[in-house]
Length: 181
Image (cartoon, rainbow, N blue to C red; front, side, top):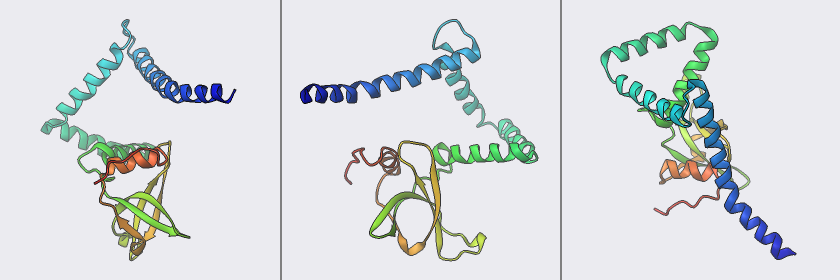
Protein backbone atom coordinates (compact mmCIF):
# COMPACT_ATOMS: atom_id res chain seq x y z
CA UNK A 1 0.00 0.00 0.00
CA UNK A 2 2.82 2.45 0.83
CA UNK A 3 4.41 1.72 -2.55
CA UNK A 4 1.17 2.74 -4.32
CA UNK A 5 0.99 5.89 -2.26
CA UNK A 6 4.61 6.66 -3.16
CA UNK A 7 3.82 6.20 -6.88
CA UNK A 8 0.81 8.49 -6.51
CA UNK A 9 2.88 11.29 -4.96
CA UNK A 10 5.60 10.93 -7.60
CA UNK A 11 2.93 11.12 -10.30
CA UNK A 12 1.45 14.17 -8.59
CA UNK A 13 4.86 15.89 -8.56
CA UNK A 14 5.18 15.26 -12.31
CA UNK A 15 1.64 16.11 -13.42
CA UNK A 16 0.57 18.95 -11.10
CA UNK A 17 3.07 21.57 -12.37
CA UNK A 18 2.19 20.70 -15.98
CA UNK A 19 -1.57 20.96 -15.45
CA UNK A 20 -1.34 24.10 -13.30
CA UNK A 21 0.85 25.81 -15.92
CA UNK A 22 -1.42 24.75 -18.79
CA UNK A 23 -4.52 25.87 -16.85
CA UNK A 24 -3.09 29.30 -16.03
CA UNK A 25 -2.02 29.78 -19.66
CA UNK A 26 -5.49 28.69 -20.80
CA UNK A 27 -7.17 31.20 -18.47
CA UNK A 28 -4.88 33.99 -19.70
CA UNK A 29 -5.43 33.10 -23.37
CA UNK A 30 -9.21 32.81 -23.07
CA UNK A 31 -9.48 36.00 -21.02
CA UNK A 32 -7.54 38.03 -23.59
CA UNK A 33 -9.44 36.36 -26.44
CA UNK A 34 -12.74 37.30 -24.80
CA UNK A 35 -11.65 40.96 -24.53
CA UNK A 36 -10.74 41.16 -28.22
CA UNK A 37 -13.43 38.68 -29.38
CA UNK A 38 -11.54 37.06 -32.22
CA UNK A 39 -12.89 33.69 -33.46
CA UNK A 40 -9.59 31.76 -33.49
CA UNK A 41 -8.35 30.75 -30.00
CA UNK A 42 -5.02 32.33 -29.09
CA UNK A 43 -5.15 35.11 -31.68
CA UNK A 44 -6.19 37.62 -29.02
CA UNK A 45 -3.11 36.73 -27.00
CA UNK A 46 -0.83 37.00 -30.04
CA UNK A 47 -2.48 40.29 -31.02
CA UNK A 48 -1.96 41.65 -27.50
CA UNK A 49 1.74 40.68 -27.56
CA UNK A 50 2.17 42.39 -30.95
CA UNK A 51 0.30 45.53 -29.84
CA UNK A 52 2.35 45.89 -26.64
CA UNK A 53 5.58 45.31 -28.59
CA UNK A 54 4.61 47.94 -31.18
CA UNK A 55 3.78 50.40 -28.39
CA UNK A 56 7.21 49.70 -26.88
CA UNK A 57 8.84 50.35 -30.24
CA UNK A 58 6.84 53.55 -30.76
CA UNK A 59 7.65 54.69 -27.20
CA UNK A 60 11.24 55.28 -28.28
CA UNK A 61 10.22 58.26 -30.42
CA UNK A 62 10.31 61.87 -29.25
CA UNK A 63 6.55 62.32 -29.74
CA UNK A 64 5.75 59.24 -27.66
CA UNK A 65 8.03 60.41 -24.85
CA UNK A 66 6.24 63.75 -24.83
CA UNK A 67 2.87 61.94 -24.72
CA UNK A 68 4.14 59.77 -21.86
CA UNK A 69 5.29 62.84 -19.94
CA UNK A 70 1.87 64.39 -20.48
CA UNK A 71 0.11 61.25 -19.22
CA UNK A 72 2.40 61.18 -16.17
CA UNK A 73 1.48 64.80 -15.39
CA UNK A 74 -2.24 64.10 -15.88
CA UNK A 75 -2.24 61.01 -13.66
CA UNK A 76 -0.18 62.84 -11.02
CA UNK A 77 -3.12 65.21 -10.49
CA UNK A 78 -5.70 62.51 -9.74
CA UNK A 79 -5.48 61.27 -6.13
CA UNK A 80 -6.28 57.53 -6.37
CA UNK A 81 -5.12 57.20 -9.96
CA UNK A 82 -1.74 58.78 -9.04
CA UNK A 83 -1.10 56.12 -6.39
CA UNK A 84 -2.13 53.23 -8.64
CA UNK A 85 -0.32 54.49 -11.75
CA UNK A 86 2.95 55.47 -10.09
CA UNK A 87 3.12 52.28 -8.01
CA UNK A 88 2.50 50.07 -11.04
CA UNK A 89 4.97 52.01 -13.21
CA UNK A 90 7.67 51.90 -10.51
CA UNK A 91 7.14 48.18 -9.88
CA UNK A 92 7.41 47.31 -13.57
CA UNK A 93 10.49 49.52 -13.94
CA UNK A 94 12.04 47.78 -10.94
CA UNK A 95 11.73 44.39 -12.66
CA UNK A 96 12.11 45.05 -16.40
CA UNK A 97 12.71 48.74 -16.99
CA UNK A 98 15.86 50.68 -17.62
CA UNK A 99 16.06 51.49 -13.89
CA UNK A 100 16.05 47.94 -12.53
CA UNK A 101 16.02 48.01 -8.73
CA UNK A 102 16.19 44.36 -7.75
CA UNK A 103 19.78 44.00 -8.87
CA UNK A 104 21.51 44.07 -5.47
CA UNK A 105 20.89 40.76 -3.67
CA UNK A 106 21.77 40.73 0.03
CA UNK A 107 21.55 38.51 3.06
CA UNK A 108 20.51 40.13 6.33
CA UNK A 109 21.04 38.88 9.88
CA UNK A 110 17.70 39.15 11.69
CA UNK A 111 18.75 37.76 15.06
CA UNK A 112 19.08 34.44 16.80
CA UNK A 113 21.44 33.26 14.07
CA UNK A 114 18.70 33.56 11.42
CA UNK A 115 19.13 35.46 8.17
CA UNK A 116 16.88 36.42 5.25
CA UNK A 117 17.57 36.94 1.57
CA UNK A 118 16.41 40.14 -0.05
CA UNK A 119 17.26 42.99 -2.38
CA UNK A 120 18.78 46.31 -1.37
CA UNK A 121 16.43 49.04 -2.65
CA UNK A 122 17.67 52.21 -0.91
CA UNK A 123 21.23 52.68 0.32
CA UNK A 124 20.39 55.80 2.29
CA UNK A 125 17.34 56.92 4.26
CA UNK A 126 18.61 60.43 4.93
CA UNK A 127 15.40 61.78 3.31
CA UNK A 128 13.56 60.43 6.38
CA UNK A 129 16.21 61.54 8.83
CA UNK A 130 17.31 57.94 9.46
CA UNK A 131 21.08 57.66 9.41
CA UNK A 132 23.03 54.45 8.90
CA UNK A 133 20.02 52.47 7.65
CA UNK A 134 19.04 50.91 4.33
CA UNK A 135 15.86 49.34 2.94
CA UNK A 136 15.74 45.73 1.87
CA UNK A 137 12.83 44.20 -0.05
CA UNK A 138 12.20 40.69 1.22
CA UNK A 139 10.00 38.74 -1.25
CA UNK A 140 7.79 35.99 0.07
CA UNK A 141 8.03 32.45 -1.23
CA UNK A 142 5.37 31.26 -3.68
CA UNK A 143 3.83 34.66 -4.16
CA UNK A 144 4.33 38.16 -5.44
CA UNK A 145 4.05 39.76 -2.03
CA UNK A 146 6.91 40.87 0.15
CA UNK A 147 7.96 43.23 2.90
CA UNK A 148 10.10 46.34 2.80
CA UNK A 149 12.24 46.24 5.92
CA UNK A 150 14.67 48.82 7.32
CA UNK A 151 17.94 47.35 8.62
CA UNK A 152 21.11 48.83 10.08
CA UNK A 153 23.83 48.96 7.44
CA UNK A 154 26.05 46.70 9.54
CA UNK A 155 23.58 43.80 9.37
CA UNK A 156 23.35 43.78 5.56
CA UNK A 157 25.88 41.87 3.47
CA UNK A 158 25.91 41.95 -0.34
CA UNK A 159 25.86 38.65 -2.19
CA UNK A 160 28.02 37.86 -5.19
CA UNK A 161 25.11 36.24 -7.01
CA UNK A 162 22.89 36.87 -10.00
CA UNK A 163 19.77 38.69 -8.81
CA UNK A 164 17.48 36.57 -11.03
CA UNK A 165 18.83 33.40 -9.41
CA UNK A 166 18.36 34.84 -5.92
CA UNK A 167 14.77 35.89 -6.75
CA UNK A 168 13.99 32.40 -8.11
CA UNK A 169 15.53 30.86 -4.99
CA UNK A 170 13.41 33.02 -2.68
CA UNK A 171 10.15 32.62 -4.62
CA UNK A 172 10.58 28.85 -4.71
CA UNK A 173 10.93 28.70 -0.94
CA UNK A 174 14.59 27.79 -1.27
CA UNK A 175 14.09 24.64 -3.33
CA UNK A 176 15.38 25.96 -6.67
CA UNK A 177 18.95 24.95 -7.41
CA UNK A 178 21.17 27.97 -7.98
CA UNK A 179 24.33 27.54 -10.07
CA UNK A 180 27.56 28.01 -8.14
CA UNK A 181 29.75 30.99 -8.94
